[in-house]
Length: 215
Image (cartoon, rainbow, N blue to C red; front, side):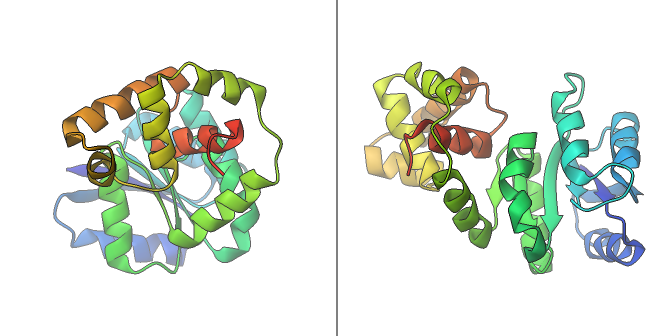
């Protein structure tokens, strides 16, 4: 059972998410919060698997709340940011803060449910429209020396795999492209995350772009 916490300052939105998820087998909503500080406190107390995090909230915004949870070594909860197109400027900041996914609020219900399952499983997800904005944002920045050094610690094969991950390919697609088994690709990805100090694939992709490996 995937335990979900909903954090949004609009009661109607919180209620809507609860209704959507109420009928989904394997998912249960364990609580909701109207501001970022309450989201952090409830997450630490209830320990949900996934937090659906809005960005624009009072007291503490979603970015700061995400950073607080990601920096807590005792917190294994993963954050799926849900927001509107008006928040495009926050995409990169949310991912750097430690979010494992970024989905738009106008996404269909089935996409939301699928995203929760993906994030809970340890993977990461980005709305297609968001990916374009992420790439555009990173492209305007200079190379980060720390990211360059991190990528240089990878083996040649791991660097190749990271390039495919940055292109948005799944493990199955990478395996087919490199003529490897999915199990081998999964092992490479795990080692890449460990060497980069990345929480998930999204964080690894951010590092790949900031290092200049991906463009």
